[in-house]
Every structure is written in structure tokens, then in C-alpha cells.
Amino acid sequence: MDHEIIGRVIDESAWVPDGVNQGLPSAARVYDFLLGGAHNFASDRMVGEKVLAVQPNGRQIAASNRAFMGRAVRYMIGEGITQFLDLGSGIPTVGNVHEVAQKANPGSRVVYVDYDEIAVSHSQLMLAGNDNATVVRGDFCEPGEVLETPEVRRLLDFSQPIGLLMVAVFHFVADERDPAAIVARYRDALAPGSLFALSHLTADHAPEQMAGVVEAMKNSRDPMYFRSYDQIAALFEGFDVVEPGVVSAPLWRPGAGIQEPVEGVYAGVARKGSAGR
Image 1: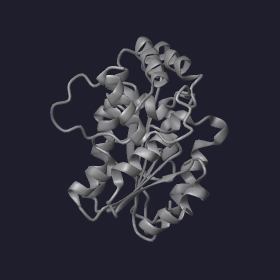
Image 2: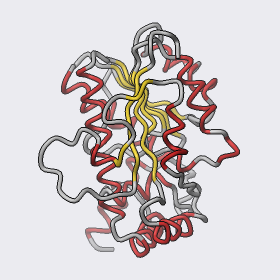
Image 3: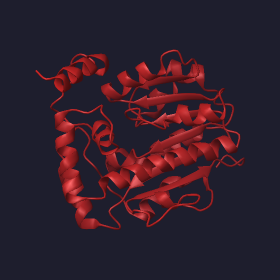
């Protein structure tokens, strides 16, 4: 056994919970692979390579989504938000919500929610000693359970504005689970002035390639369901969408230096108004 393999075994022993089926790919780990992370298995990398074979811009699309999340969190901090609920948070990598938020405001509080064992296990390691951030294992598609979790209620004050993030999660949710109703349940729990960030993969710009992505993911734990611009924009119903609206992720308040932004993700940020909408 060479040093690289030995090192990987040692590394995995620190972040892989007992009983994890390493042969069943998961979206969180495939996304980690596309972002260049190390917390993925051979089965995830195999799916990731299939994704890249049919969508060569897969890494750039993943990176554009991740960059949007960072800009959205910084925007929320600038609007006075100091507490965040990140649903379907995935495997921690550079630029996590708590890193961005606590760099700007050390008192920021963050709760991550994910159902992937690896995502939760590694998040626990990363957050050890951080009293203002925690991770909860749960299915964000069950808002009642998530919102009543003791750790969520301990760290977040729902009488005050919250930054709610649903970044790159709903393209793993079938229509039968009613994504709009899920968003509405969380929206109703938020105080006026709360901000909501959402991003979602689409096949609008490259239908054949993205059909190949769906095929590559169909036998994973997380099959994919791409939606059109209109379907994604409808998920913001009941919120007031802030400028520049729902746009391709690289075009959401990009700052300087964006050249030839890659298409594939729609994203936006919206505010819950004082009228209770």
C-alpha cells in the first residue's frame, strides 16, 4: 500500500461515519468532487466524471453557484442579517456560510442542515469549538421537523430577521414533493426583513448536455430535476426579489472581473416584506 493510499485511509477514518455505503453516490459528494474537494468516494468521482463527459462546464457551473452563495451571504450581512439557516448545506469546503458571515461579523450565528452523513460528520469536525455555528442532520423537505429541532431553536431567534439559504438544493426535489409549498412553510416562519437566497440548476441553456447530467445522476441517491426560468422564479412567490432579480448565478451582483459567465444556474435573493407576504 503506497503512501497516497495510506494517507487516504487515515483521512477517511476521521470523517467517514460507520455504516456509510461508499458504493452509493450522493449529490453532496459529487458536488464536492466538482469543486475540487477531497471528501468523496470512488463512486462519487465516477458519477462526477460522467457529468463532466456530458457537460464539460460542470466544474465552472459548480464554482459559479458556490461564488453566488458567498456574495449572497455578504449581501445579507450588509443588510444587517446576523443569523443564517443553510438548508441542504452539503460538504464543507472553502467559503462556507459561517466563514463568510463570521469574518464580516464574528457574532453571526449559523445552522447547517443536511441529510448526508458525510456532510454532517465533516461539518461537526469543522465546527468543533465554534459556539455560534452547528449542524443538524435532517431533511430540509420536512420544514416542520427542521424548524422545531432543538439546535435550530437554540441558536436562531425567529422573532428577528434570518438569512435563509436554499442554494443548489431544489434540483434534487421532485415536483411531487411540492417545492413551492416547502419554501412557503419556511417563509411563513421567518420574521419580516428576513432574506432568502436560492439557486437552481436549469437545462434552459444546454438541454442535451443537462439531459446527460440527469442520466448520470439517476442511479445515485439524489436524482435530479431541472426546471425552467419561470418555474424557478415562481419559488420566490411571497417574497420581494431584490435587484438584479433572478438571473444566471455569475450575473448576480458580480462586481468587477466577470468575463463570459457560464450559464446553467439561476439565482436570486429576496426579502420577506413587513406586510407578512
